[in-house]
Length: 400
Image: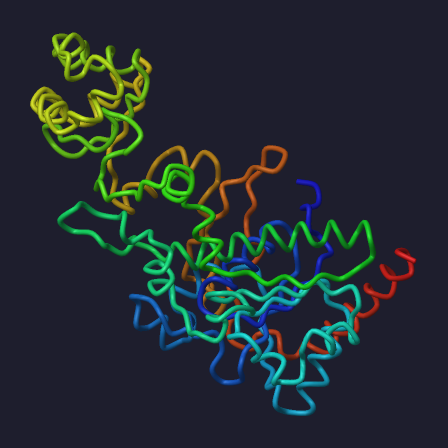
């Protein structure tokens, strides 16, 4: 595989837990060199999180492993003058500084935007926070569930009886991290064209709402608030989760042709001519009656059989899997989505991490090394700073 697109990009990562580390993990997969700056003796809070107590005690918990492979770890106390000097040396040669402190924290440490610009005028400085660094909520603390509630996404998750419900994974953290990675790569291109550094202020609240698509845009355009519909698709019917002989099955018969094919295959062709279901808008109004009729027919055969036959006929259908079942899909193995890496302290123990679903000229992005132990690269920090400074000097001279 030839060089990755961000080969040679140097990232200083001051972030903790998820949004920031997920962002820098994406940059690492794309080829960037990422150095995590961690508090001495403590490190990223995610090092102590996860279901495996032994890994947590070793400060390399499963939650940390999920998005820190391929990075380096250097312990620095930014309140210590010697460590601040090392940090400034690294900053001088960095392309990207990433942090997810609350608004103003890094400035109070002496590294506000003006100071950073003095140290490195070509720096792409990216902050990820719950609400951004401006506005009346800029100082408010934020965790994923807090942001989920404030976006409105919990209000449309579940049914009318169960909503609001939390989405089952930290979607706002990961969305904020992904948006930051996109912004950083765009800012690097801007810098390549102009020679200028960029200040990026990423709000998890806004990034998450930007991904809510029709739930937001339909209200902005039509003024109709979205309602929770559980496992049903509000834009079409029959489209949602249905019950088979041995488990749930998702079906998306969103087009008239697909609806007619579905009715024929399940042995209920009379539904096509039923005035309650004949037209798209009528099917949405009479969704419950239609679903009841389809569930009765689908209950006669296993989900895997329906999945095979419906897809073969052009009706999108798939079983509803558990996470372990999803990870066992041959499709993921074929594309190299999951990688096995050695434990950094126990070479006999394999750690499994995921990629990003992108093939680059036909090859998947695989982390080049396992997640680092806390402070694993402390002895390299002076050498790193010198190498980064030398590379920055060469790039600066070429840009001028």
